[in-house]
Amino acid sequence: MAKKSLEQTTANMAKFLQDQSLSLLEKLDILDQDELADECQELHELAEALHQKIRKKYGPPPD
Image (cartoon, rainbow, N blue to C red; front, top):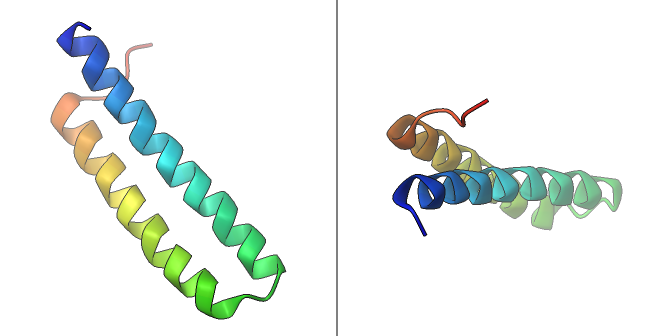
């Protein structure tokens, strides 16, 4: 796999984690699972920070 392709895949995976953690958080909120939602909120914040760091390192995705 070419380096650029691997970098793009890494950024896509980080974005996926960010999106999925937000989706899970929304569902936990609907279920009134406050303790789990708090943990998921932390996970989402970590996933968001990771995605931002990866984008900063490798640049925005090509159009």
